[in-house]
Every structure is written in structure tokens, then in C-alpha cells.
Amino acid sequence: MIFFKVSLCQSQRYLYIKKIITCIIIGILFSLNFAYAVDKTQKIDSLLQQLNTHKEDDFIKVDLLNAIGFEYWIIDTDKSISFGKEAFRLSRILGYPNGLAKANRVIGVAYWAQGNQNKALEYLNTSHKFYKKIQDKTGLANTRLNIGMVYADLKEYEKALHYYEQAINEFTALGLKGRIATTFTKIGTLLIEQHKDTEALQYLTYALQMHTTNNFTYGIAEAHNRLGILYLHRNEIEQASYHIKRSMVLGSTVNDIDGLTNNLIIYGKILRLSNRLNEALIKLDKGLKLAKENNLKKYELFAYEELKELKKQQYKPEEAFIFYEKYIALKDSLFNSEKSKQIAYLEFENELRKKNKELQVLKAKEKTDNFIKLILILGVTIISICGYVIYVISRQRAKKSKQLSDKTQELLESVYALAQKDLENSELKQQELKQQLDFKNKELTSYALNFIKKNEVVQQLQKTIKGIKKSSTIEKDKLIIDLNKIIRKNLSIDRDWEDFSRFFEDAHQGFYSKLKSKHADLSTNDLKICSLIRLNLNTKETASILGISPESVKTARYRLRKKLELDSKQEILSYLIQLGQE
Image 1 (cartoon, rainbow, N blue to C red):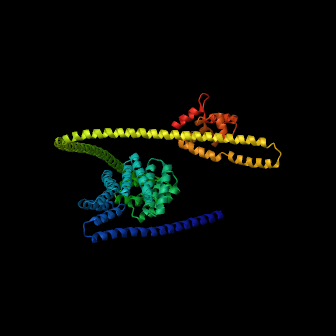
Image 2: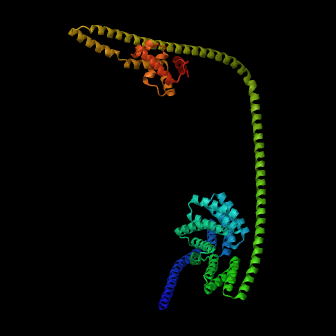
Image 3: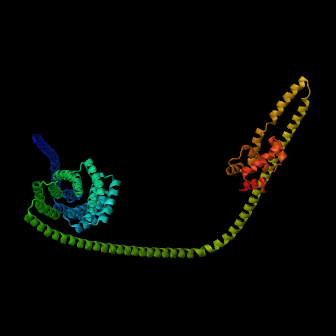
């Protein structure tokens, strides 16, 4: 029993120390982020000071007005709209399309923050057109994201996701990681509303990591808020508590009233579920007060619902009933308001479609009118040109008629003479080429016959020497040896064959290359046999030139037929002649 008391005291002390450490950490974070809030306020003050000192109505003033309107988005939407409209007015006077694009976006997002979705769509669509006109890719991507946010609030999830995906593609192409993270947060929010918690968790986790890397406080706070809501849906109270606390601390530093109000009520719900009812009541009262002060009806409704549940847990049915009545009254009011917004949105969409159709009809009519005008202008121009040409020709025709008649006869005679001359030259050239080819063929055949004759003489000498060799005289032996050397030397036909190949290629140009292109596996010896067959030499003559027996020539021709893939009825000579003519 004593041990239990000691342990209990230690446990209480541990919890007390843990609370102190947590408070210190939160205090440090708040101090650091408070500096960020001061910096943001100083930034607005600096911009306002620049605006007050800038007296000229020029592009610089427009940019200052838009920058101030941008900074007021999450602080004061009325001021954001006011500065945006002044920038819009001045941009129209100056004819400044960049200023018009940014001003419409500032106003559109401010109306979205106020819950006026139709106005938001009207201004954001106009902004999108201006950004498209000036080819500002970053502005286009941001406007697509904003339009997606409006459609998400209208529960038009498919349209919202379509615009979000387009924005991500464009931000990725531009390398804007911070904007990608913001879009991930919006998609995660949309998925939570559709109860797709697993997908939502992935998007929100990526968004938190990317915003943390970029040190974007508002984005980090928003991602923590959505993660807190997600974990609360999954009944993971500790995780939800962690993220909502982080979101509250960070959101307060950037004066995000919307986010702070939401976080207070969510945290109150977490405390209620943890049975810390007194702490929960404090947070819920604060959240309700902020919601009423800033006309945030959806958070006011949320607060009434949680206070009703809290009073039920405290066993205070009368107070619970009071909050329930307030909840029902506000819910009916919001329901009617939402219905009115939906009806207004549908009317807005119908009006937008009607205007788009009218615009398309006008554009089509304008294109048709322009086309007709162009055709008429071209027609008149062509008729005028034709009339002028006919007029000039008719005047010159009489003058040139006689000259043309005389020259025509002269030209015909010269053309006939020239044609005759060309014909004669052509015939002479063909005859000359034929004579050259015949001469080369005769020369080649003569060379081949000399080749044969030479080898026959050498072979006869060899035969004679063999007879002399039978003598036993030493001098004869020496003479025979010398004579054999001469014969062997002259019997080599490699050089003679090179000369023969060159002559043959002159007479039958491209013969070898055509053979090799169709039959790449032909050997040098195969090419020799093909050239001798093309000269129509018989087996004996071929054997004599190659220095082999007639039987070897027959074997070589048989193998050649196989390589050339000829059938039994087709002659090699006919095939080679046909190949040379291709």
C-alpha cells in the first residue's frame, strides 16, 4: 500500500514535469513564431508606407495595391477586397493586363474566404482569362488552384480535383514545390470529406514535409490542422491532439483567424473525448467567441454541437438542450443559406454556359463574316488582275502577232535541225560505246586465250623437262633444276589474274559487286569461275587458266550452282548474263 502511494506520487510528479516541459517548448515555439507574425505585420506596414509615399497612378502603384490585398487574405478579407478593387480600377485606366489578372485573383480568393462562391468564381475566371492572355504560367497555375478550392467548397469534387491536378502539373513544370504542397493539402482536405482517409493521409504527409522544407508557416499550420481532423475521424486521439496543437501554435503566429477558430473547437472536442471536460469547455468557449466575432457560421455550428455533447457528459441536460436548440436553429439557417448558394451557383453556371454559347456563336459568326470578306476581297482582286492581264495581252497581241509568226517558222526549223543533230550524235555515241564494249570483250577474250596458251606452253615445257630429267648427267640435272625454277616462276598466275580481273571489271562494270550483294558467301575462287563462265569458256579452258584439272572445274561449278541457289534447269551463264543487266 505504501509502495503504491509512493509510485502514485512519482507518477504525478512525472506528469507535472512533463506538463512544464511541454509548456516551455510551446512557449519557445510561440515566441519564435510570434516573431514571424510581427514580421508579417511589419511587411504590411511597410507596403502601406510605400503606397502612401507613392503619389503617381502607375503600374508600381497597382503592384503595391495587389501586394497589400494579397497579404490581407488570411487577416482581413474585407480589406483584401478593397485593395484588390482599387488595383482593378487603376489597372483598367492604365491598360495594365498584369495588374488586372492579379487584382481579379486577389478579389476572387477573398470572396472565397468569405463563402461567396459565385463572386469568387466570377473574379477567378476573369483572372484566368487575363493570365492566359499575357501567357503567365505561374498565374495560370495559381488561379486553377483557387478555382479548385471554390468547387471543393461547393461539393463539386470532380471539378475541384480536375483543377487541382491541372495546377499540380503546371507547378511541377515550373518547379514550384511550395505551391505543389499547398495543392496536396487541398486534395487531402477534399479526400477527407469523401472519407478516403488512406489517400488523404498520403497527400497531407507529403504536403507537411514539403512545407516544412520551405519553412512556410501558414502551409505547415494548415497541413497539421487537416491531419488532426483526419486522425480524429480515425479515433486516434493522441495523434489528432498533437497535430491540432501544432496547428494552433503556428496558426496564431500568422493571424489565421479561420484556422485558429477551427483548431480551438477541434481541440475542445479532443479534450472532451479525453474526458478533460473543464479544459474542453474553455477551448470551446474561446472558439465560439471567435466564430461569432468573425461571422464564421460553420465553426459556430460546430461549437454548439460540441458544447451540447459536453453538457451531456457533465450531466447538465438543461444546458445541453439550450445548445441543441441553438445548433438546430443555426443549422436550419445555414442549410437554407447553403441551398440558396447552390441555387445561385446553378444559376451562375447556367448564365456562364449561356454566355459561353453566345460568345462561341459570335466568334463563329465573326469568323464566317471575316471569311466571306476575305473571299470577296480575293475575288475582286483576282478579277481585277485577270482584267488587267487580258487588257495588256489584247494590246500586245496585235503587235506581236506578226513577229511571233515569223519566229515560229524559224524556231521550228532550228528545232528540227537541232533534233536531227542530237539524234545523229546519240546514234554515234551509242555506236562508239558498242565498239568500245566489243573491243574490250575481244581484248578480254584474247587475254584469256593468251592466258590459256601460256599455261599450255608451260605445261609442255614441264612435260619435256620430266623427260630430260631421266638423264643421270650432273650438268643436265643442274640445267633441269634451273629450268624448273623458271617454269614455276612463270606458271604463277596471281599477277596475271589481277590484270584479268581489272580488264573484266572494265568490260562488265558492277559484275562482282552485284554478285557479292546477292550472294555474300561467294569466295574469291567462286568469283574467278563466275567471270570465266561469263566469257563462255568451256571446262578445259577454265581448267587451263586456273591451273586445275577439268574434273576439279566441274566440281567447282557444281558447288557454285548450290551457292547461287539455281535449280537443275537453269544455266549458270544465263543467270550471270541476266544479273549483269539488272
